[in-house]
Image (tube, rainbow, N blue to C red; front, side, top):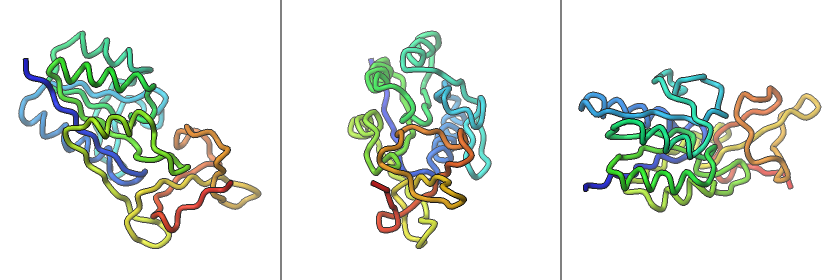
Length: 194
């Protein structure tokens, strides 16, 4: 039996990860491949859709964890599975994706390369190292205009946007709180409060 392939698309926020995923899915659809498009249910900003910041949109099934991903894949016959926002999945997603690939189904995954503290997400970094194809996208630093590889979390404090603290929770979905926002930054312009 022929195995599938693992393609990982990683980068900071605003780098076009979802747009690149939608582009790859569209190519597979043109080739008449049958796919399953999934996203973590905790990412509620766009409901049942993958939506790029440039306006590209595809319907997706929200799932709560890695076991639900595997259950859905086993219920159908798919050429590929697309998983957006992998950083929001539990660490079991690494083994689930390995199992899916070994079943002969290709996987396209996308996720943040680093959290706002500048640390890699465990499941994303493990999958990046196992990938048959790895794409690191860059955004534009909102401060200096150079290539941005980091995600800056800002929090509103006394009416002023300030860099988040290392002590803050790692996972905080964009749009879940109005006093939190994110922006892409280069290494030099990225700041983390102690």
